[in-house]
Length: 271
Ligand SMILES: [Zn+2]
Image (cartoon, rainbow, N blue to C red):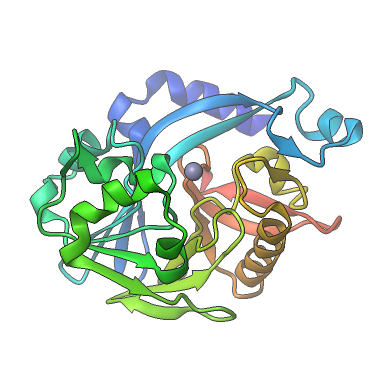
């Protein structure tokens, strides 16, 4: 309750820029939230809910959501993890003095429109100098629409196999780990002690305490659940922090196990 009051008080005083971005410093990098927006969603697309779970975690039958991308500044490079829809992205980058030409590399968690929309504007490539990194499995399962977008980067595309049980280096300062299920090649990225987990969750308020709840957007809901449990355990065991593309503002925080086989997310904001 104390946190709720804090949120209300803060949201009245924060500027729009402050709500769209959030800076987190790790050992060798600055990780910046680039928010495309916050929203409230209903429960219609969640799979496996029971009346008891709804009463406990979503009594008003909604959950808070968001769409995020992240900018990593590390070793003199500007690295994007996903590009959101491309609505607020360019203004948010500008707020940090970063222009599209300054982006060296873009790492993509998966090929849904809310993650690759910012790669093109009216069919034309938006980041002229950026290499585009994508898991092989995700590329092999790309839809025609996704191909139209990523083919703008075909000369600068790098396909990789993410780590399966432990992270594998994918780019200077960035490691990757497979999180298959939401899409066939869905991939998480790790910078220092921070896991940027893409769409490992869509409904934090529900899927952290009850990670067995899936969503109809998952290509393979069973596999998505397995990946979620595996990654959340990995994060807790290794005392890592987490950021995600659908975690409400500030999109970054820490994860703990609760005593019922679920998890608790503590936003970095309150630290
Ligand atoms: Zn998404």
